[in-house]
Image (cartoon, rainbow, N blue to C red):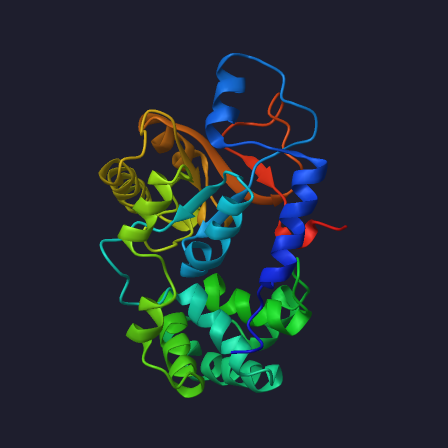
Length: 291
């Protein structure tokens, strides 16, 4: 999938060299120490975080960090052994990487909305186009529109059917085979932890916590907590990285009851530990680093 949006390994190496030269890259343990002892952070402090638990992080990121003697935090999804299914968010990425004819994909969405309008009580396609056809953080209008409809706008049953059909049409590799070689296994996550890397929580199925009911949120967070405890993470001060960066007040309440120390969002901003809410910390994306 040559069109899959990724950061090239050589580019990442350059970024690490740049950060080492110009910033103080802190481990989570160092960050926690400064916070708990009410100490000022070193000038130009930086915390590296990696979401989703891709095997790429184990095979490429980890060796580079180790070579450069840099610590970081990883936020994989809770798993037992190897994951056998791809997350819908990754299926969507693969669909967009395999079919760059976005007009075709939009026509497929339009047709599905028309055919299922009565069944799901949907508004006209033009409504979706007016409301969701605008650029995202790093995506052009068409791509952002397709992602939004498939990720959260359309009813879940319709979204899943659409994603399944489009994936089977454009991806000619068995899903289980891809999943096995796409995400870190529990064994690999444990190795990161034993090697001095920090492991935090990122849920189980990458759901939007802000859209989940109380029971779903409690289940997702409890299983995340239990997984971290199972692999040996210090659960007295663990960290939650919100899937899609989404959460609500109920999310924060559950996290506090589980001893969570802080929550990470995808809001693009430099975090201010002295002022920001510990459960709403912003972060910068790797694409925001300019040098």
